View 1 (tube, rainbow, N blue to C red):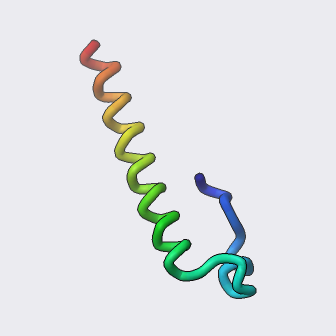
View 2 (cartoon, rainbow, N blue to C red):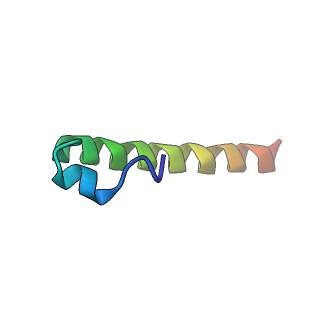
Length: 44
């Protein structure tokens, strides 16, 4: 999800601050899922 948009798209109105906050949350969830998958693979 990184690279979903450029900063100027927030400033030009393409995306709102709420959209940016949602993207940060999605990145956090993606990172957590990758960590859990890696840990499961190590156990399996």
